[in-house]
Amino acid sequence: MKLLGLILPTFLLLSTPAIAVEFNGKNIDGQKLPAKAYYYGTGGIYNVQVSFHKRRATIYFTDGNQSTIQLNQQVITDSKNIVGFGKLGQFPINRNFSVGLVYDNDGVGSSSSQLQQSNPLEGFWRISLD
Image (tube, helix red, strand yellow):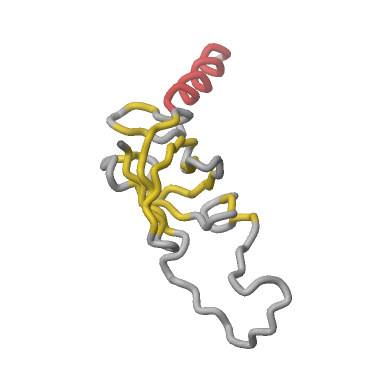
């Protein structure tokens, strides 16, 4: 009985799926890869480097800035179409919440009484690995 108590937990640990981003059946977590990133919020395409960690991707811009996004998928099937969500200045905590700064085009103390209309696609990214 003691033997079963040792074997069963070991078997469960070995059979637990790895939580990592995969591409072509390989774990690519932690590697910085050259890529192009399209940000729907600005309509811009950026030459970047990207590294993956679990269900997140950190995008490194050439000016030294970076942004972390939540990926829609953990297994990448198309290296030219990796989709995720994350607004500039925000860091995702989980699938529903993020923390960080919110950028306002009007500036602090603006007396604009109109509500700003936000772009429904703001925050969506499409990454294409080079």
